[in-house]
Amino acid sequence: MMRNTYLTSHFPLFSILLFSISFSLYFEKKLTAWLMNIGLYKGMLEFFSETGIQLTLLFFLVLFFFMIFSALKLIVDTVMELSLLFFSQDVEGNELQKIRGGTWIYLIASVCSLFLVRVPVGILILFLSATVIYFIYFVYKVGESMSGARLFGIIFFHVSFGVCLVRLCFMPDLDYITV
Image 1 (tube, helix red, strand yellow):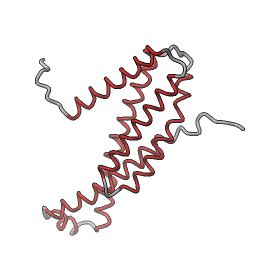
Image 2 (cartoon, helix red, strand yellow; image 1 turned 30 degrees about the vertical axis):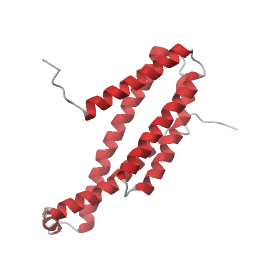
Image 3 (cartoon, rainbow, N blue to C red; image 1 turned 90 degrees about the vertical axis):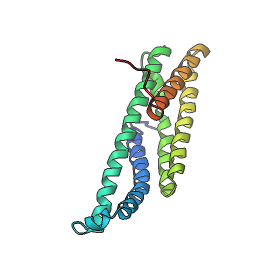
Image 4 (cartoon, one colour; image 1 turned 60 degrees about the horizontal axis):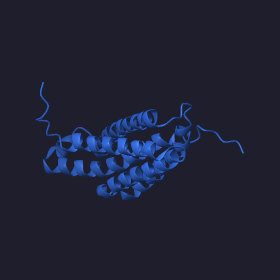
C-alpha cells in the first residue's frame, strides 16, 4: 500500500474553515438581531437585499474567524517546533512526521462544530477539547523517543506558553510595562 505523507496536509485548512463557519453562522444571527435592535437593519434594506446583507455579514465574519484561527495555528506550530528544537534530539524531522496524524482530531472536532451552530460555548468547548486531545496525542507520539526530563521540558514549555498567551490575551493589565 502506497502511503503519501502529504495526504492529510489540507486537514488544517478544512478545520480552520469549518470552525470559522460554525462561529460565523452563530454570530451572523446575533449581529443581524443587534442591527435590527438599533434600527440600522431597516435602513440597510433600502439599499441591499436581506440575503445580500446576511451573506456579506457571513463573509466578513468567516474572514474574521479565519484570520484568528490561522494566527493561532501559526503560533501553535511555531511553539511546537521550537519545543522540539529545544528538547528533541531529532534533527531529521521524524518527530514532526509522527504528529502529523493528529490533524484528524481537529478535523473531526470542526465537523462536529457544525452541529453546534446555535451553541457558541459548545463550539468553544469542542475546540478546547480538541486542543487538549491533540496535546496529549503530541506528548504521546513525541514521548516515545525522549527521556523523561526532555518530555517534562516540552510539557512545561507548552503549558507555560499557553498560560502566558491566555494571560496576555484575556487579562491584559499591562501597568507593569514601562517604556
